[in-house]
Length: 162
Length: 206
Image 1 (cartoon, helix red, strand yellow):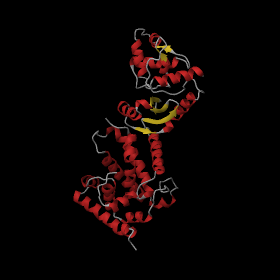
Image 2 (tube, helix red, strand yellow):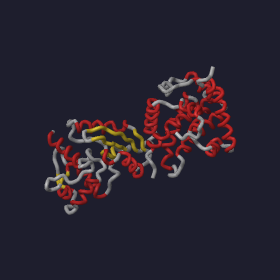
Image 3 (tube, each protein chain N blue to C red):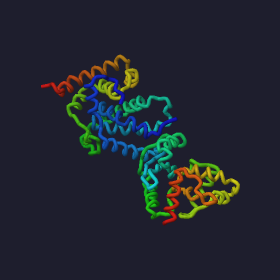
Image 4 (tube, helix red, strand yellow):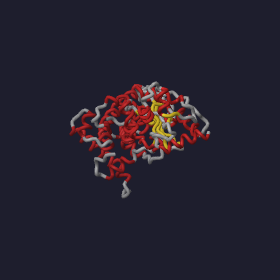
């Protein structure tokens, strides 16, 4: 028997937002989150009862993020004139520009692999399925990504530094 | 969140990505609005505090479909709605604004009948027949199970009237609390006899 969708939102909202933030940055993550959960709500009645809901949501988020990046490229010229809209940027959770800069510097494959494995907790088999490569390639992308974040971000912020 | 890593620095890094409750509430509202706009919010619900405890209110696009007492287990009721109606269920209070307002007024004794669109699709057959009759019992009045049986044209079906009242998906709004035993004793009630007595006392005093 399928649980009410509200429970799916309650269980996975935060994780999916974190995934979107890593893949797209804080600004576009809200749009990706909204489109992901709207598409998920749409398809939810047809989802297999024994499906891995988190992997399903992350797969949708992956596609929505790609759509958002594509449409931004198409509308690159008008981007500066986009109207202000509400985002979660202003929320009181700790916001760390250096972390976001470090994440932004990663190649997109690495960013996605870090998001899906380290943030969503998906096994490399699932990550590889989403990214469309081998399990080994997914593992390498995630580990390279985390290594890069460690050197560019974590080392400069660890307590013993300076 | 599942943590696939034992690396504490990575865990600390990922914690920074979290959003606060206000941001999550904002995203949830946006989802409610988009789902409503696209017509895929099959069941919206909210809860309201009343003198007889927290009431769950759930509505389809057709109207109010379920009112549930806390004693019924709100999560359990939502689970039943997911399987009987649709799992596309969100906490989305806006669709319940009017129902919540009228229920507030009812408990404030400034309203004696409900003017709400109802979705009776959870009931069928004889139970539906009985539940359709119940709103005809005026505020502050009562009928016996036997009288209701006569009204719906099945004078022998007194016990079936009792189970139809017990299965009322819209208690308070569809006033099954106004049906008593012929000797004037309370009979049964989905929200418990104390709640039934409280509702009747309130209506009698108004």
